[in-house]
Amino acid sequence: MKRLTLPLLSLLMLSCGNDPLPKPKGYLRLEYPTAKYKEALVPLPFTFEKNELANPISSVKSTSSSNGVDLKYPALKATIYLTYKEIKNGNLDSLLRDAQNLTQKHTIKADEISYKDFENKENKVYGMLYEIGGDAASQSQFYVTDSIKHFLSGSLYFYAKPNYDSIYPASEYLKKDIKHIMESVKWKE
Image (cartoon, rainbow, N blue to C red; front, side, top):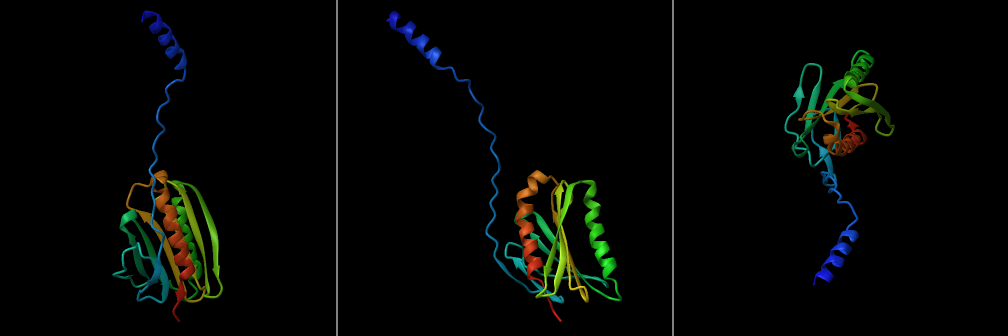
């Protein structure tokens, strides 16, 4: 028995040459439902389509100079804030400047700010989409206008401390909703 034990132990020791490897880190996998869009019924001078994942629009905020709608996404802990202003007395330049300045306020925390022009000649909708990378408070902002009478701006905010890595999947999902909002805006005449 001793004769077999020593060669078997030697064989076992030589055959186990691989170093143990730690388990790889697990990553959170977030999957969101495929977006289903329907027309948002709002008493404003425009229409658009919203994702059914957003809470139904129950109220419109109004001030003397603007109207707004909040699209709340409780499951994503996010809101897209939409603000409508009528173009009056040639104030388009100041509305554009205000929208761009709001985006530029995020440069302190942003790693990058990229923008994409938007144009829908058929519906007379022209604008800009800003995508903000990094730990900024807002990950996406946009504006659309007909350049004559209507101006709509929007911002995406999360109800959490801005940690880009953590909110990235939700941010990417909601950027698609923002693009769909821009594409589906129709002005009421």
